[in-house]
Length: 260
Image (tube, rainbow, N blue to C red):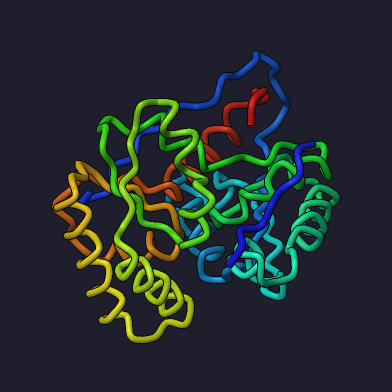
């Protein structure tokens, strides 16, 4: 298969993140979050749930305003990224415009693979599209980290480039394990045979540890959902949790970010 080209133009999860560089430009209200969702619907729901659970609030009114455009009809990301399927970009851009017109102040993508088109999505709107791809660099302290993510995410090295700049070497699962991980991601999406999905993840984690991984990076929302039900004897960095923490901070910071 040929890769798509692009144009130029824990154990217990304990995540600590830092905000992007900020400029002191105070706004009059909390920001409204927009979620470009639907691929998959479960990942979208999980992001929404974690935003709710992660927001310090004692009453309903203290929670954040969140808009969700969940369109499961968007063409499959992995099929497009591996060169076999229709591009999801027009649908992603349409969702971004819809959320901006609904008065979202910034946008989130719960899927790592969608970040391949993040720059093109950003070009369509005048509000920031936050990225979860760079966030792990702010938190990871180890130099050798096992990456658990979808196959297209690995082949396109979406996490590799920002992390390698910071001196982090990412270790990928061996090919048979990676094929099983893709199967496990599909099972989580379907809600089927999660016992097998857990076995697959256990085997992949064990192999990554033998290969020298000092920690794990969860680069896929479905794997984040799966792994939170398991106990892993390695530190775990969860990109979805980092995105949640960054979004809550940004929504309440009352300042505008300059480098998303």
